[in-house]
Image (cartoon, rainbow, N blue to C red; front, side, top):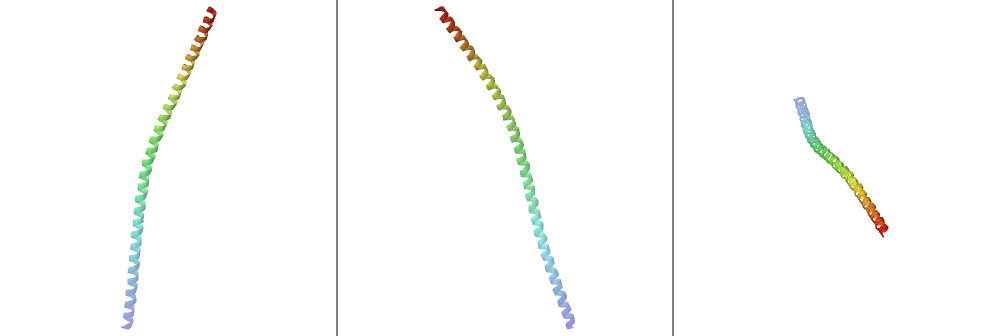
Length: 107
């Protein structure tokens, strides 16, 4: 009977230890699953943010291209107007010189 009690106690102790180990494994698994879920959520948020930022960058790139084209057009127009104004001033200078020469020749 004593041997049976010792065997029974040993088996109960072994079952208790296995139960404790199983509980610990379940807790670790739950913690691991929670960490995995958190990581998955974080990855999804990062992917969503990446797509938003990528779209914003694409929009900025397009806007920048449009503005660059407008600036180049404005520079070309200003250059054309400058050259035109220089020609007008040179023409007026020439007219003034001619008028001055004619005025001196009349004296």
